[in-house]
Image (cartoon, rainbow, N blue to C red; front, side, top):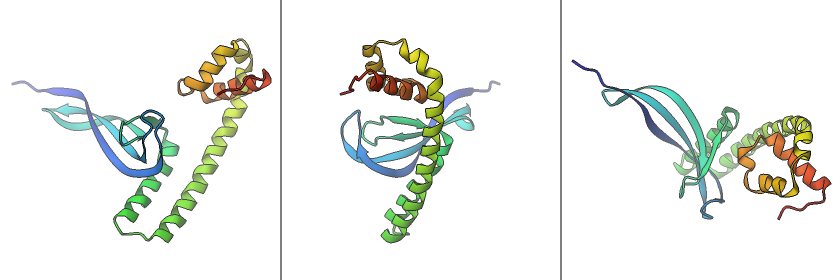
Amino acid sequence: MFIIFGWNYKKVTSLGAVHYHQCAHCHNEDFWNLSKISTYITFFFIPVIAYETENWYCCPICNHGHKMNWDEFKFYKEIAEVNTAFLDGKLLEEARQEKLEIINTNLDLLMESKRLKYLEESKKWREKVGEKSNDELVQIVKYKSTSYNPAFIIAAEEELQLRNIEIE
């Protein structure tokens, strides 16, 4: 007798549409979706235990997007639930707008507190940023910002301002 175990089985759960905007990757405009991607251990090819979960906010056309942390995900999930209830006819437009306004206000507060935290952290990066050339800083800020710590990006942007370098 033998037992077949497996891993890396991925299950994608779409949680609904969140915001309408243009994708930087494919340049299409549409409502971006919130998705939860769970990775499972399988037993005889049946998913049994999820051992990893990622939350993604992505373009419905090309699936380009970004992974979200838990704090942001909670708010985006609420937005998706409100939009889904509206599309299903369970919520009127006025009620939808009221709920979205409350959620977006709370999301703005979260983002502002994160921005202030990164602004404080950016002071630690100033010396490292000062060692970079103008071209390196422009490349980092313009093309590689998702690959770097947000506090480092803030420090790089401030350094470019001090050097009077404009980012196109």
